[in-house]
Image (cartoon, rainbow, N blue to C red; front, side):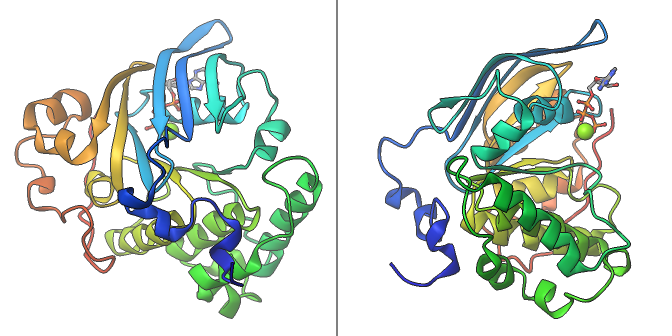
Length: 291
Ligand SMILES: Nc1ncnc2c1ncn2[C@@H]1O[C@H](COP(=O)(O)OP(=O)(O)OP(=O)(O)O)[C@@H](O)[C@H]1O
Ligand SMILES: [Mg+2]
């Protein structure tokens, strides 16, 4: 192939048009009957979720529905039962360090940025994780700085800046950039826009769109305008179970279903929100989902 920084990632950006996907392509990640019990409390009672092999898949649901617990269960951060198949491998009995070796990068809800370290140092810490994984599976290999710097040139320009002085959008570049550094085959981002101003939400939407050109993304998100723009398919959780799976645009166009599953009212700004596939420069309407 070429020296393109994308060349080691799967799928390639060109794999995004559905016509170029292999006709046999099934879900990259397939979760079935996922259950989590913590301290005797049943948090998840049967989550089913498929993540597409390209682009963005959204995991939706009201506050407390079980979204974070679901992604933590996939990562092995909480005890779980059920099936978690990733690219043909069963992960449900694996601890986190072995899940990571299969090539899943996780950007947690709190971002996990070290504010007192520079951008370069934050990336360097992730690089060590890549080295540890070397030889351990499909996520192994040299850290892919070429990809990170191609997608997010700002991180190169701001290499010496303390991460704590970055904007919320730039911090998300660091958080997502770290997951790309490790040549992962799936990125899971948990509410990357939480608590951010609308202008910064638009920046983060761009960050996610760029990342998803290189690696499939499972996006936990409550900003439905952003979800509508980025995610082709979605799963909706309610009370620790999957309540709906399907096409994102169809769900959000169905007022009754959107209200029932997500609490979206008929006067919701989504009615005038940007369409899927719109230009990355399209402003994102912040859409709060009330419990
Ligand atoms: N360690 C824990 N111990 C007890 N209860 C928990 C624990 N973790 C989560 N829960 C409860 O499980 C439910 C699901 O939590 P979770 O964080 O997965 O929801 P969420 O969909 O991510 O919510 P949010 O939108 O607020 O981020 C909530 O009621 C939460 O209080
Ligand atoms: Mg959460």
